[in-house]
Amino acid sequence: MRREPKKLYLMKTEENWIIDEYQEYILNKDFPCVAARAAVNRNQIKCMVAEHIACPKDDAAILQFLYAFIDEYRQSADLFHSAAIIFKNTEIPNEKLFDTFLWQRLQQLSNLDAQQFKYDARVNPDPNSPDFSFSLKEEAFFIIGLHPASSRPARQFRYPTLVFNPHAQFEQMRENEQYQKMQNIVRKRDIAYAGSINPMLQDFGSASEVYQYSGRQYNQTWQCPLHITHETFKYNSAA
Image (cartoon, rainbow, N blue to C red):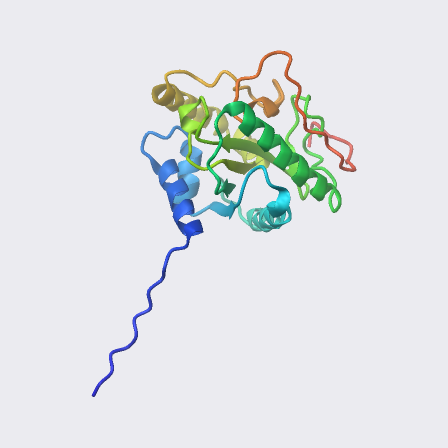
């Protein structure tokens, strides 16, 4: 009697489902950020699912994941690469709490990174500087925070998420005269999606990008809690 070959069924894990949900969220036809959509379509968003955004136990694993992403990104000539850290726990009742957790995680990642690497010399390590950008493995990043309690509709994702976007990509687009066009498209789409532009938006070099990370609208007395401990190269604004 002839035996039928065994069929192998690949079962999705919880992490797979969460990553799929994140990609579907970005691919929503009304989602404002066309660069993020391009990254998903090109399979250039790398995702890691961690536990709770308030818990430090995954910090070392997150850092290693981001280091691997940096190594891969540096080998590519293509634009639109991102790395997303998605946290399973969805209990984020308000923007202020998410903001607190975001800076806690970035502080711990920065502290760990400072044990091995210097700061990216192409950006300023002072969070108050208009030329600041967050650095890991000497690679600068612009961070975008997503969570269910965000006041910005484009940032309302069910799972708290930190998206790391290599800063050099924005500079490459500026050099190619692509940045302004893409920025205008995203802002027009954001107005159509949310009814208004994000009041925290500023161009790099105009105000510190830390005001844009969490999506929360800060008042004039707010001070960024991030404290950079890296040994630094001399910052070169012309680099």
